[in-house]
Image (cartoon, rainbow, N blue to C red):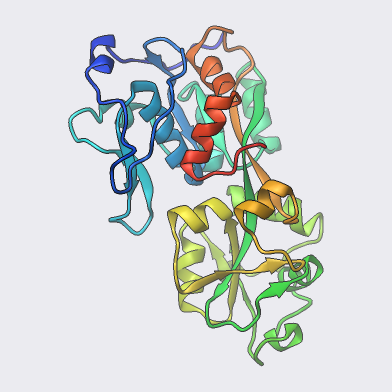
Amino acid sequence: MRPGKTIFVPVMAIFVLVAACADRGDGIALVEPPAIGPELPALDGSTSTLPLRTLLVCVIVQEPCEWNTSTATRTIVPATGGSREPFRRVVRSSGTHGSYVALANGEADLILTARVPNDEELELASAAGFAYDIEPVALDAFVFLVNASNPVGSLELDQIREIFSGATTNWSDLGGDDRPIQPYSRNPTSGSQVLMEALVMRGLPMIDAPNLMLPSMTAPFDAISRDVDGISYSVYYFATHMLPDDDIRLLNIDGVEPAVTTISSGDYPLVTEVYAVLADSAPQTSSSRLLRDWLMTAPGQELVSRSGYVPLG
């Protein structure tokens, strides 16, 4: 059995924490905590799932929490400064690929990711003697970013494929200005890139443009906010909750706007799932398995909704 990296939180410390923050300016009302015992699983995951992971710790220890809007990338943080140790110790963000590696290496017990594992990550788990236990816990969407001054507001999926395969190179062919298209991509192991290849390209090779490959989750937003000719991609939650930018607009795809209602209904054509992943060898009574299972209950899905994600429905 693979040992986990659990962190013990003294029970007395839990009882002295304030239990709700609904009346705070950016506060988030908590729900009843899951019954997982006094040990927190070590959490990791995709960059976009950091707010949800932090909110999970908030509800477990019943710590007031709120959106921090003082930095460029918004996230959920504990509202008081005196009890942040559980958050520092159990909520880290290695990115999608890095969190699968951390789980395979025994450095994380439960990860929340924007995609299922790729072949390399599956091999890592196999080499460690277990398989990933994967369940969806929230809905998100894959979205395309353009500069707010770009007159193009909607594209068909076939047009997106033509842009990123190099077949279409000028915005005028898509109803825009007579300007060259700058198609920015992501690094190969990023969650966004894997989703792009699986959901959109579907085996069609992408244009080989190393100078347009961006290394981080925030890089597409930095690039598109400055480049009127650019187009790139991310996930809806990150674009609307963590890095909203008035200089960037989300494209409608096949005539459908990416929004909570269209994601929940499935009308938006690029709905994705957020996954909770642990080792299949994790005991049934482990905090990681109990927390994952709780996320799929009514209180867990309510917490998903309060984080800003779209619940499973």
